[in-house]
Length: 131
Image (cartoon, rainbow, N blue to C red):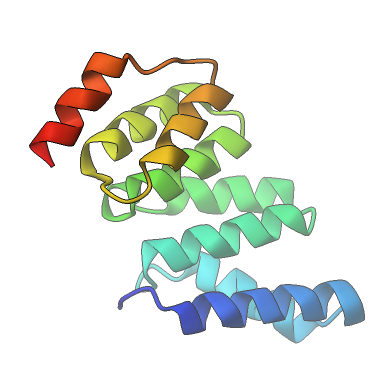
């Protein structure tokens, strides 16, 4: 199943319903996507992030650990790992994102900066020439 803007929109709408109305059905939908092994990893990461935003810290981290992160976009994984304070995991996935990203390099660099790491300009130039 591919990640879709529609699924992300559904998750955001569900988050809003939980915040505004305390909707248990919306919360169940978010949890369902987060736990669905057949869902696209990006959708699952978004659901995990929403669970974390809603204050379900333990559930969001447990669910994050259950996602096959090798199927997910490295930038999304790195950002989530960084938010969870997992610097080593974040660094690993930001390094991978530095190699595979072509349009969002500024986000990769921002992630490294958030971790207090400066990417050498020579590495960035070399990657840019190989793209």
